[in-house]
Every structure is written in C-alpha cells, then in structure tokens.
Image (tube, rainbow, N blue to C red):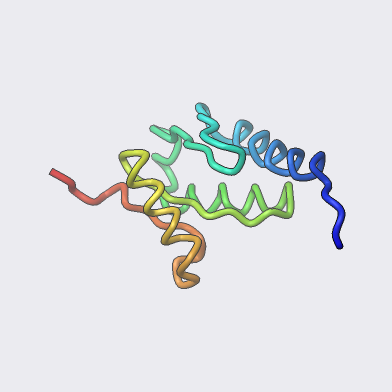
Length: 103
C-alpha cells in the first residue's frame, strides 16, 4: 500500500506553472499539467527551438521536473508537437513545428 500525498501532487504542477509565468510574457494554464505560452517576439534572437530548450532546462533546474515542449502556430499543433517531444527521445524533449506552412 502507498499513501496518497495530494498536497504534493498539487504543489508540483503549481511550481512548474510559476516558473513558466516567470519565463513567458503570457501563460494560459490549460490543465493541472499543461499550459500554453505565447512566445511571440520572445525568441527573435535565439530562435524558437533554442527558446524551447531554454524553457525546458529552466523548468527542470528550478523544479526537478522534466517537461516536453511543443512549439507550433496553433494549440492543437502544439499539443501534437509536445506528444512527439515526450515520446521520441531523439527530439531532446523539444519539437518545433512553427516554421511549417499549413495552408
């Protein structure tokens, strides 16, 4: 048997969201373990993939929690990119679909 620690389970995602809010100008918390960040203009110097890796590293350094980062022009595509980032180790945890043309 294992005891449940609901306070810890609520605290960890809150800590991740706090870090995201420090790193991005606009954060939309979507669920307890998912958020959308508006990085428009924030990655002009480093590029989106580098910014995504920076976000991933900063969350891990500040919380000890590994996250996947999906970058895309829409929320649906960002979720798809995030799925790929989490399930395919060769991505390094970051997938950028922002430059793809979807017309």
